[in-house]
Amino acid sequence: MKVGYIRVSTVEQNLAAQKDAMKRAGVEKVFQEKRSGTDDNRPVLKQCLDFLREGDELVVTRADRLARSTRHLLNVLHDLNEKGVKVTFLEQPELNSGTPQAKLMLGILASVAAFENDLRAARQREGIKAAMERGVKFGREPKLTDEMIAEIKSMRAEGRSIREVMEATGLSKSSVMRAQRSPEPQRAA
Image 1 (cartoon, rainbow, N blue to C red):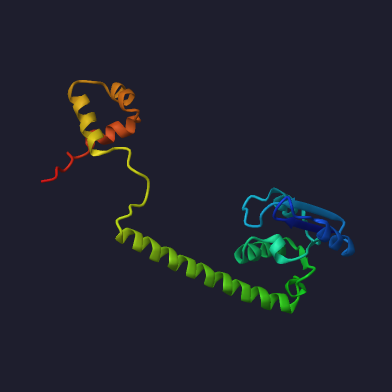
Image 2 (cartoon, rainbow, N blue to C red):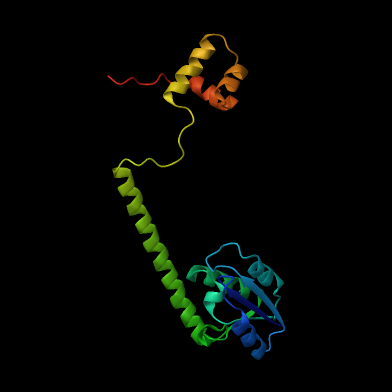
């Protein structure tokens, strides 16, 4: 069965040209979506991919209509290949599954995707290092400040129960217990 997937990014855009292309290609069933290609949550694409069975052919106009990134395209094509689904790109026949050109292009795209990931990771590491050098702290703020720890210890020393301390501070039992076990805060000289 020939199954089509068409997508535009905004509600102002029109699906008509892609619908016409699907009709000319002899597509029997079309899944259509109006959502950004960068959106991870594309329910119609998921329905389309789940619908496809071994021996089916997925038809799309261009790769950017199907995938949000090179890595995503490679993952989708790999999954479809594993299912035994052929993929046809009407405007990019060099990517059509099963051709020597597609194998070459997808190999190049896989290398580009790996290169992009390596560059992104290096930039991220550099950014984190620079931020840490500027004194930026990462992770969530601790709930237990030195003042809270001192207050909790004081309330417990006065004989207040853990439940009373929990209610007074709004902390969980484990936070109150952790505060009790904490060493005394260091005082600045």
